[in-house]
Image (cartoon, rainbow, N blue to C red; front, side, top):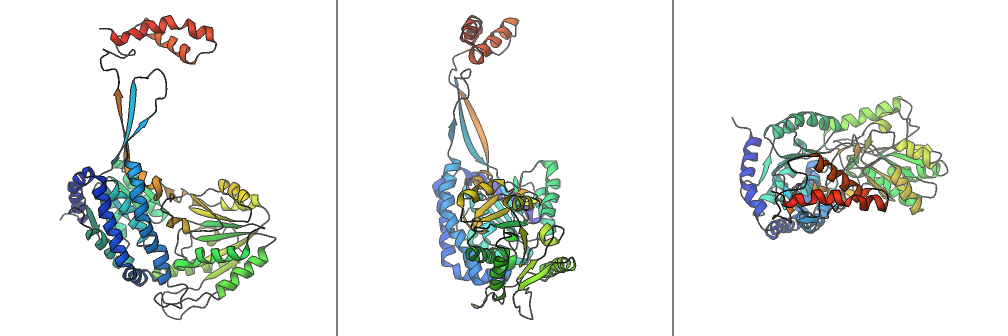
Length: 495
């Protein structure tokens, strides 16, 4: 029996050439139709996301629906720029007769495997970028958020795309990567764990299928001595606990200068103790449930391991008795060997560590193999920008955290074990195309290039003289090379 992924890829491959050759304006109009449907169904979609994922309605609207609406217009403009052919300027005088034209071509059929933590916005932007650049798309969403996946698929299927161009498949996550690669998608975009990312790289190696991997995070936030502690506490509260902490780019390791450590712990602790945890559909809830019982248990075990090693719960919120709820937790007295400082904790937990200097903060921030995002909190913007350059992470925010995923114009992706490649921005669009160069000779009436056959010592010496003429030291030696250069120059017309 044929795999549903194979069938979807074959159907998309049949539809893709006509889609790629269609006028860009027509492709853009289809995506504008998706945006219109999204606007019409915004409330309905927010409720679906909350039901499926567990996050509160404000999170569903602010971090899933709003960014996608904003993204469509940006990508329509940016993709036109990325797809526009351009001329590459000549690099040297010798090849003055060559004109180089660069053009962006779609890969063909792109596979997208998306996660459950942001089940709408993560795949949405990738699908939009792929379609605008002329690709076909096969989408597989997480098994924990299938209602969101179906709603997302319905949006694109209702936009009047060519039959078969966009495919939506449902299957267990453990089977998805191998199935997509066996079906020979032309490129695979995966968002998920670092462990699975490594497995996909190994599976992709035999066919050299290119991958973009957005993997885990263990993000550091550095609160300097001159930071606005009120803003820092509020910003880290949001980035650490929105979506119940299930954000790969959320703040987790909070490094605080010793001079403001006690004040910051008190400020953040007060906010956490007053955070209202409850059902996502209730307006009185600030933080919703974990998406699954499995993820809840994983985080509980990680927190227990930290406490067993000496960590202290400095503050935590109240939590409902029933459901997949976890309290928001602030840990202090942490060490570098604890899970919260060493691994990704995909839940509502942040750890605060005291540091004595900028250098110490940077050293600790860079001690993790994961480097997705980070932040610096300071009133001194110049120093903060200088520190940002020293942090090994793909996105650094100053006096904010996590929200850059909502900036469609900024590339999203990490360093180290946080993945490879980029989504979002022109860098993300560039991942959707292959660059082809067309080199045109402006002297087609000549019979040969000067380095073509037949070879001789005269050809060698003429080319050697050409090096001296173009790049040699001293005006006299360069002028002296001209006779031998002329000796080979006339090869252009030699028969």
